[in-house]
Image 1 (cartoon, one colour):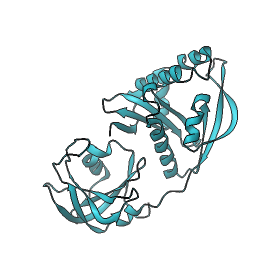
Image 2 (cartoon, one colour):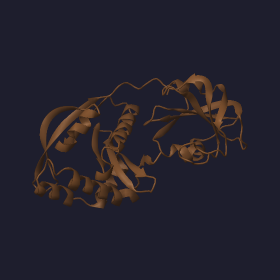
Image 3 (spheres, helix red, strand yellow):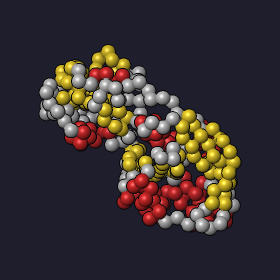
Image 4 (cartoon, helix red, strand yellow):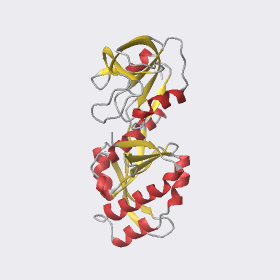
Length: 278
């Protein structure tokens, strides 16, 4: 999991600005004149991103080195994707698609059923591949420069919220079989599991594998554990929800759950479900 998709912070403004400028200067020259590209990129400043980070859904893609390699922005009120940009060296690496998928998932959760965006000419194939349909050719003014560049208005109808079979286990007693007990290492990424982690035998998750579960508040490695499912971690950018299982009668706040599973869930955008009908 070398790429972490997370919510942007004000401290990311400089890194976001650097990504944006590089993506414009190096990624749009095939469709725009040198003058247009320089005015487009040159008018930006790091402080420009502070307000949208606070007001909109603003995500960044962070490498395991801590470097920001891309960002995406969604305006919920306008139902508009404002931006998806990736550094040139990470283009076609799936980062842009993953950012857009996260924004779409969040839009669905907020009740939106249609998204629009204004795409630069070079980005049209990317958005078409992601299911957006060109609506009209238009222009976009670069701030107060008086310069207008060609762009394409695009739209996408969003599917209804998918069924969440994992939520059916909330408040039920389940038995978790541990394939990664506390203290074991992830077979691919090498991190150590600070909690017991396993699966519900015979129950398929949407990804076709057994339904996974975190076992919290159990301080020793276990081969299996029977407890109560108090919540579900619903990943917005991955078809692989997780149960949260604890000893019977124990209650944990959302913040406590997130702190316990951050070692793995930091690489995904997720929400914690508490009710079966969420």
